[in-house]
Image 1: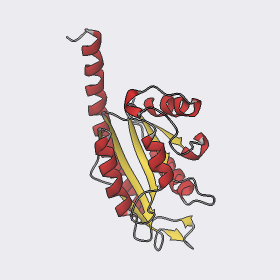
Image 2: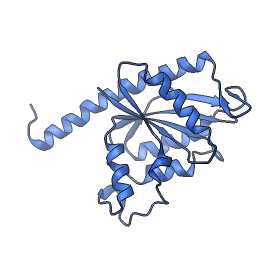
Image 3: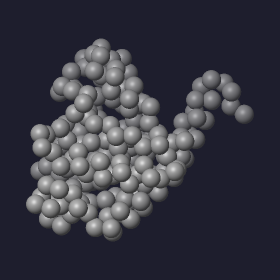
Length: 196
């Protein structure tokens, strides 16, 4: 079964990200086509990128990087839950992504964004980042407006339409995640010399 991470995209105190990520997880875990897990970047305490070697080399010197690498490598696909800060994603999420390279390759990603206008610009910025990491992004995504999908800009109260949008994105993510899982397995077989 596919393993899909729901990755929080903010570490700010009092963040809305936690409630949005929990909303995504609550809906996703009812599905039977993948195993979903919340991955909160705040719990990994990643400082500003402090590895001396580029992530492409996969030779990590810090324990926090090794722990983060092991967690991210264990998934087949990702849902990034991102705020929009100044027409982009959060610095904390970008930093967490930048720590690694191969762990992300040939996997799939979907997005849930939020902000004053739904966070669409954060998603578009993340799509460019994902392309550089060889992550295939699905077309459908969910945008949540702080004006209409939250109460008092704090408590998430999305309409039922948002639930359907989330399922549409997850349908695409499971399909792409499965296809790329097959690609990774074939590549591994080729390396091991057991190609049929």
